[in-house]
Length: 362
Image 1 (cartoon, rainbow, N blue to C red):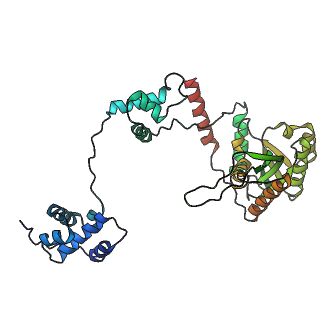
Image 2 (cartoon, one colour; image 1 turned 90 degrees about the vertical axis):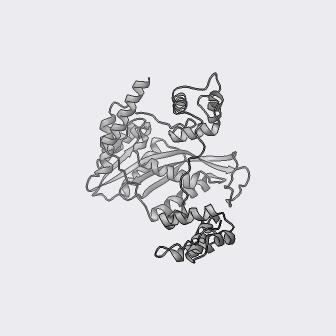
């Protein structure tokens, strides 16, 4: 029995959008077809004529005319959610998998942590099911984050001292975050790599030829982001003092100098202590032990490694030093400071929580 004529009244502004959809070559075919059904009805065509012209069934025409009448154009663009296949795993079984992941290890000596396939072997479910459960609960057994809590008895005092310099720097003073990046290797690859192209990452050989090392001395001006640098073959107290003297001479005499640095023995050498006594405007502020993350210059070293050193191929230490120098000099043309935002209270809250967790587990 042919369908009766049904004329759809188009909503304001929909005709031009429907016509664009009906002519589109990039829109999904099902959406194009729905737009054509609605436009044909709006022209006054009978339902049977629409079925014949577009090659669709009567229920399809009725469905999308009703959908447009009820929801407008958005009703044509999105499918309604479907129930899908019934779940084959019960909430209790899912909870058991999560519990096993969190509190057990694979049987025997198979592995130190679970994988989707190891868990699938034990539970009898497909590894894709295990992966979906892990994603839903934020579980990633294959990953591990590294940490170390400082045991420095003066941790809180040093933390307040260093963070205070970042958040509330003293007036008429310059704050430097200082450190050495030692043993930077001048590496050359054994074979030329391939460049980046569509569908393929750039390549480089895993083995290399070593052509010596250098040590980068760096002082990051916390306020401006500018980096003072020098490369030397060793990092003894002699080299440290030489660089420190360069930094001190570059700062106007009316300004005090505050230097944030770690607990490396070179920084506390008797010769260095005597130099400090002769230069009272220079003040050292030591980070707590095992807390180099408090030193902002480490953030610069990370940037230098990622953007310059990791993929660098050189055949001599001189080429390595030249590459480091070029990178820092270019960065100093438009320096951007690293902004410290964490307060002492926030840091102590995290440290205390970690200590409590460790005490509970161990």
